[in-house]
Length: 467
View 1: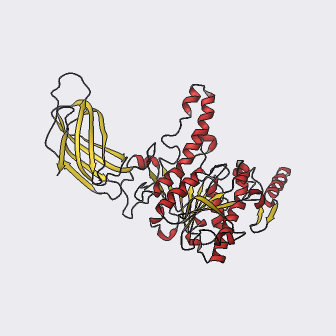
View 2: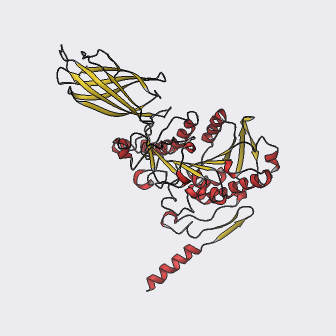
View 3: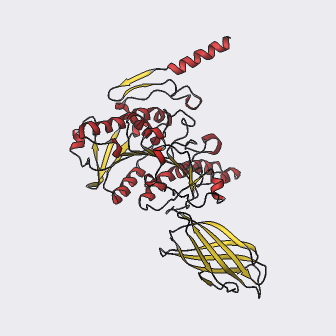
């Protein structure tokens, strides 16, 4: 009985909590759900707005290089700036201890493509330590909501024209702002932070209810202590995208090899690089997507393993969304979270976008042999690529099928060359050919078939024609 009383007292002490109140932004408690849970045992109260010193830095096509600092507290600074009420406003929000470089790049690219009010949020004073940033994002979120409220009341601006783009902790900060500002147009979460946010109530983290449309890109969605991840494992939006499975990105550092070599200095450096790389891929993908509306096509699927196996190829009749800037072009029925997971593959290096095809080759020939077969593919856009279709025992009469992710958008395939290489040395009488090659494009499911009756010696190209 004594243990039950102690547990009850502990629960009351953590659930009631303390409270601080600040002008403009209101009051904040440190009880449930903000503190006292398994995920947030060390969280506490936020600092004052004066200590955090949140700044709104405006870039437009009239001032693309030098920002104008604007303030809702002194709304005349907005009136005197290049801010335009007939333009969409996109606010880039950094996370923990960020130097702001990705925000600057984002504004630069956005202003090349569209005439918008691009605002970079600076709250570096309140985000230098992770636990302080976790606490302080509540006040900064309230500051963002207050800023939008001033736009609405003083300038007649619609909150539906505001798009918050938040990385890491900045994604949850955007959610805090959205929860305070009904009718917010859109929030994009770029690998929303995981530590202190895994499996927390929607009041604490980014959630679909925070804006009319919430889209999320997960690039490091694993628990910190188990698989070394900085992103949340939870789906947070109307559309949740998981490039390369959403955990670890191709081209980012391998942390296992230095451990096996007992090279702990390399491991320490690798950990920093690992987090910077995987976690940052989300905003790099988004930035690239601004320049290409057709890139980063994502497929609804139950799991990444199912996606890799080809079980979710091609797009369903309602189509596929594109991850990133143009995700809002996809029609989400009734704007309700459909809890579908959307998967795609990317490259290891920029440009990251890939385009998915399914290629099948029916092999003809005079003998079973050991070798490799290749297809050189050209498309309507003028792009060409070569793919290894099979390697090992090559059996005439067999059909070899492979899902491929092309580095360029080749469009509908217009020409195909087949070539094979034999693994054995010396003079060979073996001949192989592609009797039929079928391509199915991932986006629309278009099918193209090419045929030939020829069989060729090794290293000699066979040109196929449409059947």
